[in-house]
Image (tube, rainbow, N blue to C red; front, side, top):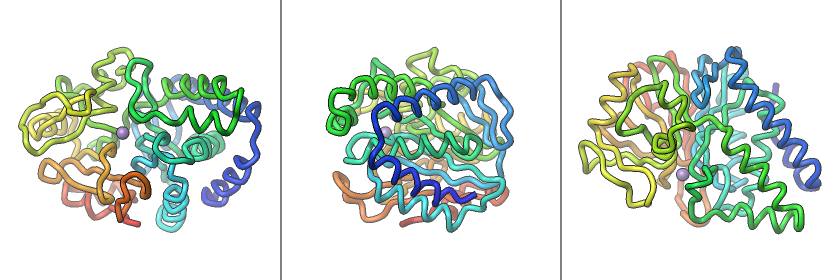
Length: 304
Ligand SMILES: [Mn+2]
């Protein structure tokens, strides 16, 4: 299977896709998301409600793309070069849309790839795939749908919005790593609570919005106006209770990657261009068997 060839094929299809075709693809995707929580045992991962347990040996982890298709092309090229075909999955950490002019093409091409390869791709939810009570700023995705689909934009957006509510909010590899868009909740380390975060607004908000801070030990409210800043004590407790080596997350713009909490938290940022103009972006290509300590996390960062 060549994901890169399929990805290029999807981009071609998207150039002249009708709103009716978009709606029918999104309807299929909605069914796939709803079915994932019922069918627990895929070969490469299990999904329990909003939490994914990854079982494959090889992972590509991709951070924020925010509608930058040039970055997504580079990412797919790198994955094609460095990730083995067999026993591997791609884990996207969310924030597919907003800020970039190609938000629609970005999220839609990933959705179409996932539909064709449901076991190979995991699409986590970012804060830009928001619940109704927490719309981020800017949220310009609807504007681009308006330009592309004119009168049909609202119908298309509404289905996207339904889909956002169905995306899983975190993933993990047993005794290795925890993967999430924002960060860990500050008042619970329970994976079960994380799996059911869609039923508890505060935990969902924290998974999507939290940031690590090296200036506090415990936690404080976030200057973003949603979510919290979590300190090293929260991280250590979370890792200890769940027996993980580290946390991989995205959400914060940086020059490709950064570490917090003495290397226990690794942030990756996977897009370039307006409005951040970071020189480097990065993804992670990981063989989980080679991940033995937090120092190993950085060894798997691939910068482009
Ligand atoms: Mn974000």
